[in-house]
Image (cartoon, rainbow, N blue to C red):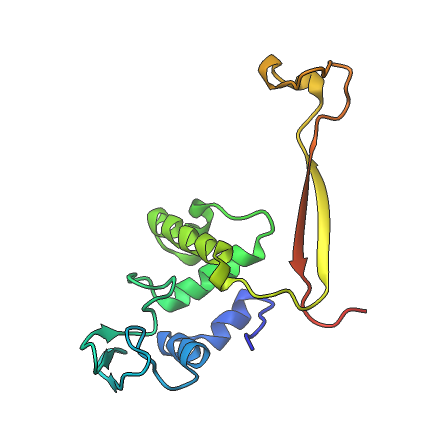
Length: 178
């Protein structure tokens, strides 16, 4: 089960070092026993620098291999912070704001956000909904009167009040429902 954090302070207390982040990912991904992403049945040797070696293929790997953290030099602690900040903002976050929040360059923040968006949208990262699901609706758009001529729908005149499009969002509720 993943820990639930109510603040950045709790997150930093749970993951104060890079090693704490690595240990957490190893428990989640491998349950304590490293498995090669290249050959799951191969014997794995532990090497220096948090690396492992697959005996059958001779390839080196680490806990980041095959994940959204792969091929980056950004510390896992900053990845965890970015994940927390990204998932806690209801309307999203800009790369400039994320860069300021976790103290990286804007270019790195842009890269982080693209990886996180990919992970949130990828089917392998989505779990089946098991709890109560919250649904909300909002209208996006405006009155027809204020629309440009090219944007008005056919047979829609300026007197039409609502030219809004309904958008529905849903998410799984955590914990017990009362």
